[in-house]
Length: 281
Image 1 (tube, rainbow, N blue to C red):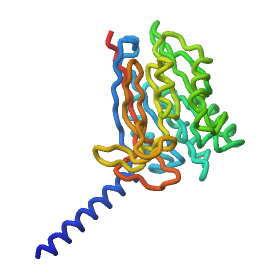
Image 2: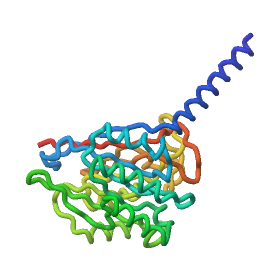
Image 3: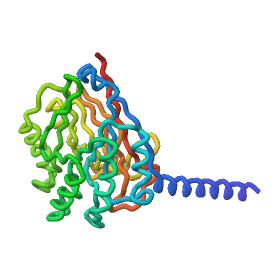
Image 4: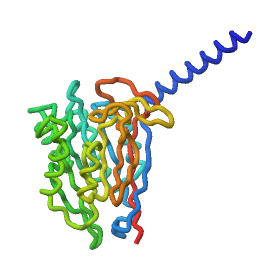
């Protein structure tokens, strides 16, 4: 009887784990973060940003209607794509652009490239132009200002460093140079950058808020330990997912929505991130 009981318990655990994993790969959740600062202008108090990262041509519902519906329910003021909207191994530009076209109808959309866009090579220009044609603002080492009343917030966007050199030892200096060339003002700055592993560069440049992706949440998440593996960080990455704050710089890393080389996530549900700004003034 004891042996049968143990086998039954093991079987139930396996069934639960299997169902949990299936559910966690076929549905998209919403994760909310609040970022407060005295540097956030009063006009931008409760300003909401929806972050779509690492879609990798995934599709949740016909034409990604599940993603569109969930973003719309959050009523964001701005939507950002922080790279890898497409997958270089199974590229479907039209699917990605179709999603962007629907999201533009909800709120202004901004896009920066990830490494998979770089790996499209000549097809990247096709993707970029189609995104622009449907109304997405593409930021390539550029900064723009958005205004509310007389208040200003800067939105800056970085190219993925692989576009300039695949040597990871040079990535930090590449991003540092591009940030400095943008000549950021003292206004609150939101930086869109696919790469979270270069957090020290964002910190050194006094960036207020960084929105990032790339890690896929570590792909496999172990309770109390975090993500197991992330590109360019290896095993047990320091920056796997969530909110990181050091001095006056905060970085929020999305676990992303799709998969690339590894087709399954474990304890790591795809997510749409909602960031809400809180002014302390």
